[in-house]
Length: 252
Figure 1 (cartoon, rainbow, N blue to C red):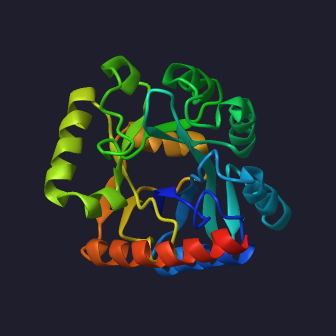
Figure 2: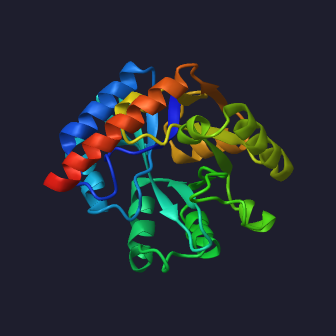
């Protein structure tokens, strides 16, 4: 199974959810060789629940994923924490809804939830917990203590960061900290635009539950694949997103 652990289906946090855009994203993900994504939309995007309301209304929920025309969509979200940095929470659909409802008072900068409290909610709901774009200058996780970093089940090797920074050096730095913490690394495109699907993905045996997905991750049974076209495709997606974002945020 080929899966992307970090994926968005809205062009930006300030844009509305557009079903046609979602359908195109999934179709392009399939065409780029993926079998599944973890849908990690920002928890403080406008109308967050519109995404899951649409999925519930239009696609069957089988085991722990939405079956979208033969493609698996595992529920999740990307959550900012008070200490700075972003996290990925991936779980059963009710778990994601429950945690998101708990997060309602904590959606604005200056009022984000602490990593310690979020970890308690994540563990109570048996979710997969991933530290996102660890060394990104705007939202780093490097200032967390080792004890807090151990909350994570894995660290995110992020497609955008591999483009933005020196790829070999960035990957080596993340590998060093992952080895120190004895944490696995998983790949995520972090895409908001379909051009970016497939630039980085993961191979593992076929899974249909969050428990099985989490077990594969924590037992280091996931192999990260970086496509040689990553720099060109991420740049293309970045430019396309920039102009599309202006359009949808004005007209939404």
